[in-house]
Amino acid sequence: MNTKVLIIAEAGVNHNGSLDLAKQLVDEAVIAGVDIIKFQTFKTEKLVSRTAKQADYQKRNIGGNEDSQFSMLKKLELNDEQHKILVNYCHSKGICFFSTAFDLDSIDYLHSLKLGLWKIPSGEITNYPYIKKIAQYGEPVIMSTGMSELADIDAAIHVLLNNGLKKEQITVLHCNTEYPTPMRDVNLRAMLEIREKFGVKIGYSDHTEGIEVPIAAVALGATIIEKHFTLDKTMEGPDHKASLEPQELRVMVKSIRNIEQALGDGHKKISESERKNIDVARKSIVAACHIQTGDLFTEKNVTVKRPGNGISPMRWEEVIGIRAMRDYEEDELIEL
Image (tube, rainbow, N blue to C red; front, side):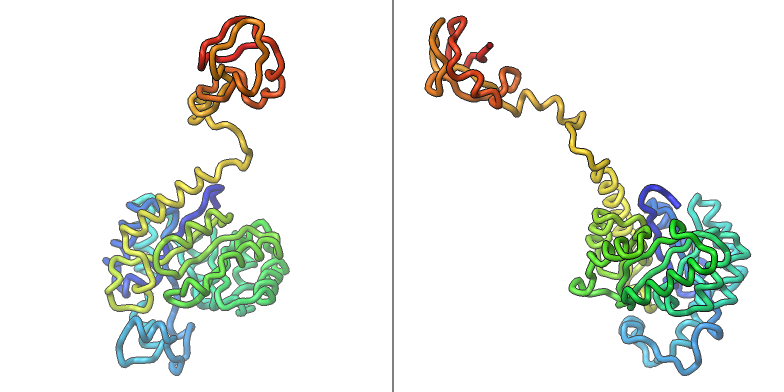
């Protein structure tokens, strides 16, 4: 886990079941400069019943007459061989392959790939056997919290802790499970409540349109940002419309890296870049008119003007009432 903000590009199922499209997503994630590209690992038969209906957003985004989750997801599976090819492809491109398991068998399979990191998606936060199984591996866990209240998060964290995980291994992502998420429902400050309540690292999994909310999350202290991306928002599939296209992903990554630098160390001090401008921008006490030797400095014959390489105006009271030791012309820097 990086000390900088970890940026996860969520390819998810936006490959539409095509290995070629999945590789193109990897290529675009590399160009964008993300840390991790994440897919989804599942066996449809283990994930949903044949009677499970699609979510409203899935129906909207797919636009077909079929309303079965089973038939939709079956088309989006990646088999074991495709996973291995993608892992090797990511390795050859210098990017970290990652995936979310959605059933117990898929957890076993991802464990065999030795990824060393786990993602608990929002839909599994109440799945006790699932959370317990992941916790027992003793590896860092990222947990999304869409559709959750504090009590749900508390219960899931307790399962992780009671099964061998340490609190410092847990990062909790604030999230809203609507695609796309309306701005009024983001509630970004809830991320801070999670950190305060549970004492864990925090992050944000974003489903809004655009990039401003994840950037704001970084400014608020998110250590991980997860964002869906696609090759083309107009492609058929459940998540494309709520995803970034490659150019948008690049801008988001660049913006987050800029914010990382801009946050600094939190200590107010003069920066090296601005130090040279002190004399230019600040002011000094100068003669407001001709002053003769022996004259008292008064509020009528001295004033404050740039540059700032003379006596600071903060010493005004020291100067007023002192006699001039020499003649001054207007605008000359006063000396003591």
